[in-house]
Length: 335
Image 1 (cartoon, one colour):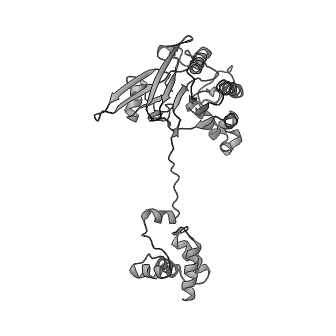
Image 2: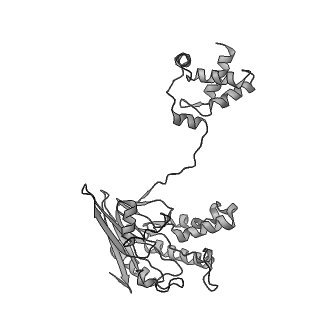
Image 3: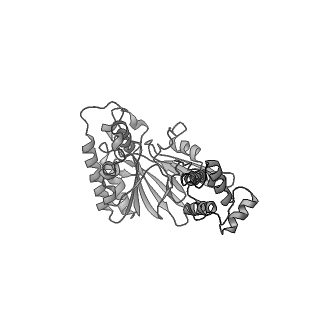
């Protein structure tokens, strides 16, 4: 076996893992030229292609004679070897276990209505829930909003303290119960503020909102824009669509026209439901859940004309079926 062939095969083997090259053939060719094995990139690249079985039947036979396994090259493999890396991401849904789940959203601390929260938690204790989903906008992040702000309002540090107290209370009240905290558009205000004003620090874990709220220490799982799968029921906060779903009869109807399956959202502070049966007989239902915040905020003093106080109880069964109890709270009574 010639020196060129030996060196070429040795370098090919060096960059082979599980039968696939970890670098491009051109990169190997460049290294061979640097080693003075070949005079030109063209000659070196032809040799690499020949001994990897890429130049026809004789090439495949030559590669096989050295004991190398030849697999048909694909476009996907070619892109990978060319280091054509992709930043595209696919979000994986979060699956909850079977049981009864308390779903609370749009609390907007420090503008929460304590009577509504108390009623929901008392109800959850009575039915012995499995866990809790905090479905977005638990805190308001008023101080970090892009909107004009009043001067005499709680600052972000005060807001963080109140949210931590609330989370501590939930963990103490429901010991050992699983808690998910899905970040809504108001929690995302924190990240947007960091990107705008301190981009260089935005990826520092110690000053992330998750860290400032002590979620890891409390055993609370943070969820971003992923779907929370509650059996066949798909739970979102509602801001993930980047536009309102409330241009229909009601938010539930708007949600169904987008997802075409069963699911629920908060975000709109309204209680509604919409059911449809498809031609093949499958049944779907969509819900929007009520809020737990001030019904007469300064930016919308008559919000109470459409908003409703409420929460959800979602029962998830082992076969992935579910039952949704879309509860309204009037005063301190659960309806």
